[in-house]
Length: 153
Image (tube, one colour):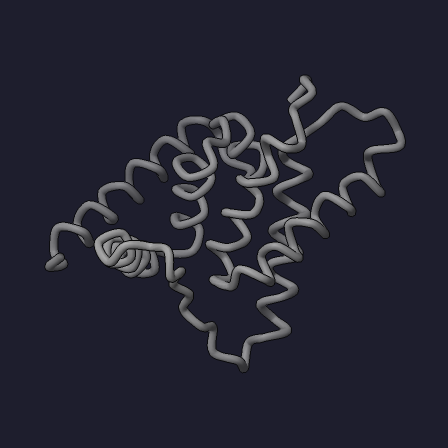
């Protein structure tokens, strides 16, 4: 990607990505900050233009490292006291359906629909052609619709 993008604009998206992967707010916040620090350490002082692939790759690697460290610990489910019951039920319902998908399909849907990462960046990140990404995305959406349709709300 050959254009500069605002760090503040991407911060929330990287946080969502990390939270989705780890399901722990404090850890997701720490990893999000570490992601930006590492990006700036490695790419910021060279005058290199912003590239989402590097940012998401750093976040992904840090999430994997954190997951490996805490493999033996059960991941707690968080619910905010400010959330309404219906919103919480919907989130849990959707999360349950997403967790039934393979990890690669979960990641594609998260990147595209939750974080609004452009298709060309996802293709570069995952090493897929546009056609393969489209096919994988459609397959994942069909599976998700099936899971959501089969579950009682």
